[in-house]
Image (cartoon, rainbow, N blue to C red):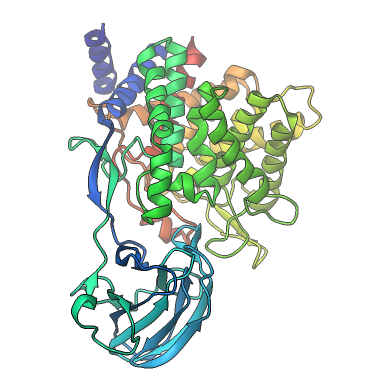
Length: 552
């Protein structure tokens, strides 16, 4: 049977034409099968990577008792004279010296570690300005053990909170040299038993990636918004086909997360695995971490372990996720209070899942509020398209109609309409936004069925994930009666283009890499495409499934 399906799929590819619902199913099965083959639910021991420019002075290996003292030193290099910002968090009282001069002193331990509040940005106990000279700059510190963990964190940062690459740590030796316990904090270098040493190398359990996988940047088994959408789509494919090989894959994914959750929590908290496997669960500082990644959990949402994690993520989304004054979700990046089109999909399907799980309309009403609110901020009334973002700092949108951003909006609205009664007082308002968006998109579809990376710029490249997302939204709209039957034609043309980007192994071409909000069209035009990037695979699988449902 599988051989017959494979032959049929090859005929579709060779002919380059749309061959009916069964062919759409065959194509998406090929994609899903490749993902499943490339996924490993196993771990290997890997050295903890030094990432994000975070300098960790970890005195735990010295076994200091309360009251005992330790010292540490390192060298930083910069190419120019200037004043630089240094973020500091410490679990110990300490004094910090630059070339022998005191630059900062802290009388008590304050916090165990900094909090990552946005991508690669951390909240520190304090930030100081230090004037460095071009070349080498020696830093030393002395510290006293108290009841808090004997660890200190330093990071050179920009005004925006990103890593300042103008200041670099020396690589020989790597990290801070330390010694202790010591009796005399000014005796450098300590002698005898207090000889300088490096903190021991920590090893993490890291998720494996198959060496033959089409996509190897992140394991498909990791916790990520794109992985959540992908596994969720494979689960839906399995439900439609009544095929346990697909639903079972979803169960393996969620079981692997839940079975190892406590260990990875310890690894993140105690070994400072800021970029270790599953780190995003514990970071949970944005919708990317808490909403879309959790979608596969709803398949068995009533399970006690699933429910416990869902409740924790839900508490963040409902109570701590940044919002504008009117309650609309936003981010602290690239500047504070920025609305991202992506966040409509990162939040709405999760909220709808919570509504089904709890039978509490609070969550569906929240989803409606977000859909209507996002339209106020990022929908362009002239084109009917959605900007990638909106900045409260300027009161203006980002100015570019990125394809996948519009795709996330389209998928989110299709999910909401699918879970909203026509009798709901705001159903017509949501439907009006959705149909207007679909109508607007028709004007920008290319003759081969594709849409472009920047929707209104045909000189930008044709992009697979947004094309799949629009096929998904239009096919579902026709099937559900939200759109006229005539929309089946552009939906099928779009799917035909997507299918042409899938090779015989099930690898999807032409998916734009992860993309922050850019300042201009050229930024988006220069974004690379990556084969089988999971940021588009969920869309491709669900689009093919919607085409199959439309033709059933």
